Image (cartoon, rainbow, N blue to C red; front, side, top):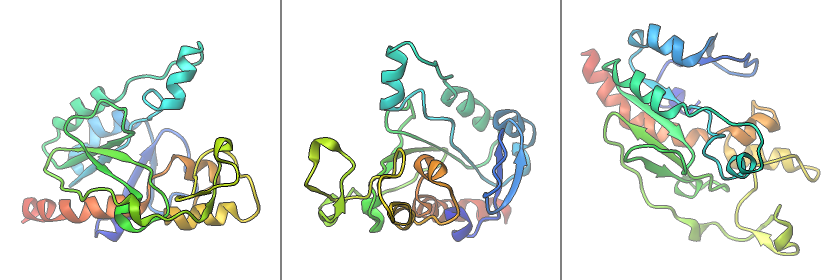
Length: 206
């Protein structure tokens, strides 16, 4: 949605159905599709599954649970072959190269959700501004019971009436289920990146 707001015509690709995806959608293996059709697009944003790198999944692996594939390097290798601008997004622990970090506090949102972005072109980002996020939300951390949180927690199951609507507002998303919302990034992030990338795309098309 953020890229649409920045002026791009979006096509989404995923190996699972996405009935609430608001733009053109193709169900396919993303890596296979990009390898075959990536050159047909002006710009690509890739978000390889992050479970292998997330803190929670890391603890699960140590407990002998499901192992997740490392898709960052294969994704990067395919993207570099295309000769077009690209961005790859993932969690802070993922092995991205010279990424910039975006945070909800940069955009006046009531979430932090730090995410890293590696790109084939230079992307600039402001510093986090956590000081502007004041304690006023119910905390989901049992260790902080009775204290207010500075941000809305958008993870796990819903805990109280009205929480889903609060999560949607904090993220700037109103078309997803809660499960989808917990895996998403705010559209403000991709709009911010898209507005920096658009001049490169327009120059290449000129």
